Amino acid sequence: MEYKDYYKIMGVSRNVTQEDLKKAYRKLAREFHPDVSKAPNAEQRFKEINEAYEVLKDPEKRAAYDRLGNNWRAGEQFRAPPDWDVGFEFRGGSNEGFSDFFDTFFRQSGFSTHQRRSQKREDHHAKIQITLEDSFNGINRSIQLQLPTLNERGQLVNKMRELNVKIPKGIIEGQKIRLIGQGISGGDLYLEITFASHRFYRVENKDIFLDLPLSPWEAALGSVVKVPTPLGNIELKIPENTQTGKKLRLKGRGIPSSIAGDFYVIIQIITPPAENDSSKRFYQKMKAYFETFNPRSDLN
Image (cartoon, rainbow, N blue to C red; front, side, top):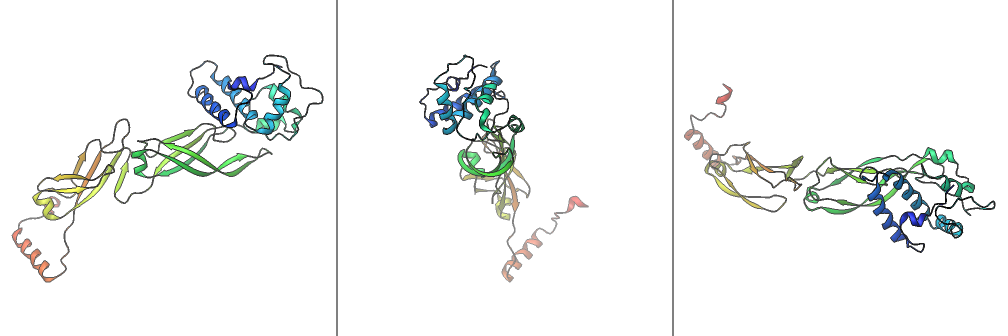
């Protein structure tokens, strides 16, 4: 079989640091992931990159590979020395579909081919809650999740993992963020966005709704009132004779996606309570003045 030069596959030198190795892997994984790359050999390159990184990211595996690699060049026919021993028990990871070279290299590890093949890449789905303000601004979040992980026996166990997640500006509820390679055995992790409930607003897709309380005189006479929005307070003009349920639209003040949503103000008229004799007499005078007014005339 052909010797695999993992350093060459990753495009790094043999003395590359772990941090630079990780950066190189992330760049190559994004470039050749089969779901996004248009390169004709993307799937094969993606497998080679994962195989190379599986070995080089672990200090013990890398040291064992380096001991052997000094005597070989890429493309040469490889046969492990009769007395070859990696020097430790290899604990497999996301290695489904790895090369014969990989299998032979770790053949004395006690990690069987059956175990490796049983560890299939699987996508994992979870939810992440953000605030409406997070969607307006975009943020970087550090989150901890209980994620299924394969142990050395090939069994799924839940393990706490900390991930740094970039929440893009304008994301909406239900949208998913994909983290490549963060699922089970190298699968992907999908984080579905949910919004925390807000004390002012309701959100529907990209639009935001606010119930705005008005006094009877503000609604009847017209007024200018201060209205809170996620982008700051504004002065809103209320037309004369505005009724409860009237919807006022502020275009483009919803969630700021590529096509921004709208902000809707829903009018709610609140009557003052008749708490004392004076206020009751006022309502009695109003009743007398609007004697012919029937708010339920449409129900007759």
